[in-house]
Image (cartoon, rainbow, N blue to C red; front, side, top):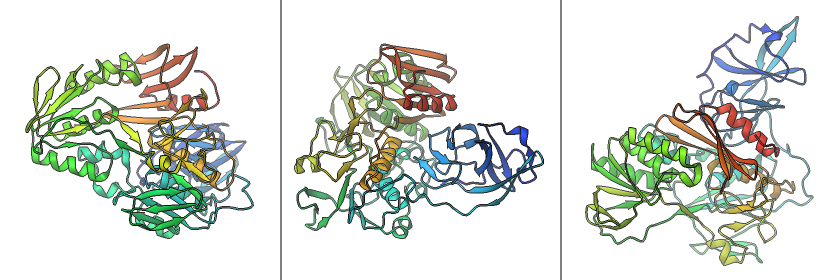
Amino acid sequence: MADQNQQAAGPDLAAGIDASQIAEGTMLGGRVGDEAVLVARVGGRCFAIGATCTHYGGPLAEGLLDGEKVHCPWHHAVFDLRTGVAEGPPAIDPVPCWRVEEAGGRVRVLAREPAASAHGAHGARRAAVPESVVIVGAGAAGVIAADTLRREGYEGPITIVDADSDAPVDRPNLSKDYLAGNAPEEWMPMRPDSFFSERGIALRRGARAASLDVGAKRVRLDDGEDIAYGALLLATGASPVKLPLPTTDKLSMFTLRTLGDSRAIIRAAGAAGDGGKVVVIGASFIGLEVAASLRARNLEVHVVAPETRPLERVLGPAMGDWIRTLHEEHGVIFHLGQKPRELTDDAVILENGDPLPAAFVVAGVGVRPNVGLAEQAGLAVDRGVVVDEYLETSARGIFAAGDVARYPDPITGAKIRVEHWVAAEREAQTAARNILGAGERYTAVPFFWSAHYDATISYVGHAERWDSIAVDGSIEQRDCELRYIDGGKATAVVTMGRDTTNLAAELALSRGESR
């Protein structure tokens, strides 16, 4: 949770400011005592909310105002001006609200308002809500779904089942600050245990859902226990691809998905010591984030990948070249156009026969959706669990969200599966409301961010192919916008150093507007 006091600067809003400083449709950051406060004018009325995003502390005054919603510039969380409620992930907690007085040509921010409730905020429900809800998976999608059910007023039993004894954790940090040694483990839980107990949510860690009986509406755990459900959400996520390489027991090869995985890599890095050699297999986002984090721990990092440019398939050649240069400037050594052939006791042998000495290896070559439970139950599966625009599977009353769900893209209509943290949370909100009968189509535009040293890449949309890439600004100066054009329209936008531009692109794509 962000510290609401950390950005208290600007005009003293309690003393008041001239009303002309806040024109219609604009916002202004200031302070009330030691607290950072944002004032915005919408529909002729001024509102005041906390100015610091409750996710990672982004400055909301530098974000985007869209009607009565404020969008955070860093990770695109959305807050309601009237209530302070976090309506769009990755933020969960609300920001505070203040009472505003406008008189005599001045605007003053007065006392805090009582915390608002979001219950029932999204309209009508079915007459009959499910007697109980079971959620399989305690990742981003599972936790947000349970929280949304409670925020929407659902009072029935909610059970979350997850085989990971550490779940839920802030997964994006596993390959970033936590792995780099810049974030303590206290930051890693996505929600504390009290979050679940206070909301009457039963969290079953270390329990694996072994089978699903759709007809009887029961989930069987691996210990033989059956759990009945009225509605079910599959938030089973994905698992890292494990390379079938010849190896020995002496050279460890890790993948990274859980807190336990990240801890194991940190222990191996400590054992390797300064200057220890590590080989990262795969120039994916997670592979390169791992490489950057291990460089922060003073290891010698070698990246092996079959492509000629890192991330070219996702970001194009110009960004791919820049990313390679950035990592090389920080000491990463690339071996592109190569695959590993085998692992010996102390080295990775490439296909060309070259040995790369290594204290340990990390493989970041993608993930596969965990569809086993859905397949066993006879649900429609096609490179993910197939869902409709309401995120409901082929079985009524069973929904899917997160990395495992394959849903219709609101922009192109094609079925897509998006492996992004924020997307998983947004899907979960819609799925939860539809469990309660909202009949809400999922239309959110995918967004993700990737951090490499002191550079952050922000991506909105979904471009599996493109005819051209339009570049505005300078990639080398980290001040740029790239538009991925397919059939004359932008289907994705990437920015560096242009947070507001990225937010505007997300809103434009969500409205079907081409940038």
